[in-house]
Image 1 (cartoon, helix red, strand yellow):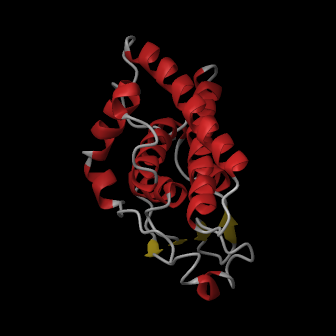
Image 2 (image 1 turned 90 degrees about the vertical axis):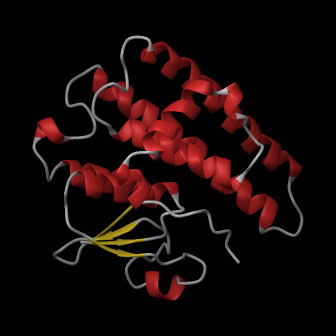
Image 3 (image 1 turned 135 degrees about the vertical axis):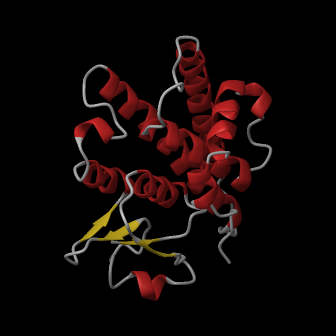
Length: 208
């Protein structure tokens, strides 16, 4: 398989980490949607990442769909989302919230850095949505940590939280203080220390 996209994208990074944890071989092409758009477009008309080219040539897009495919390649007991309820839908919800605030962080960056005239209404809305989601996740994760959550193997929800947190810290330094979200910050730091997270990583590179 071929994974297209740079690892400073939380969406690409979560796929790369899952591939490595699943021990699925892949080639990484660190193409930028800005600088390498012409290389990406023949694979993905949306010119977005992550883009995953399968062995048979079929191309998958969007991290949620890609991870669903990868989960189907491994035995149920190895899948990074729980396979039984209610654990499954809770983990899916957490991952969705994490990727949701990552999407808002990307939108906010584009608004602030790529537009000549910034829409303060849109920027403030994105900012508020990010902080509100962080507050919900901080409350929920702090409650779960007391009962031993995060003590077992890493799952998709944990990965999503960590990669989204790192992107936010690098793309928008100062927008959220780790001291205000100590559980999220601690979980992200613990994951970032793992070899797989260090291997599948790249400092944020602002688009030119």
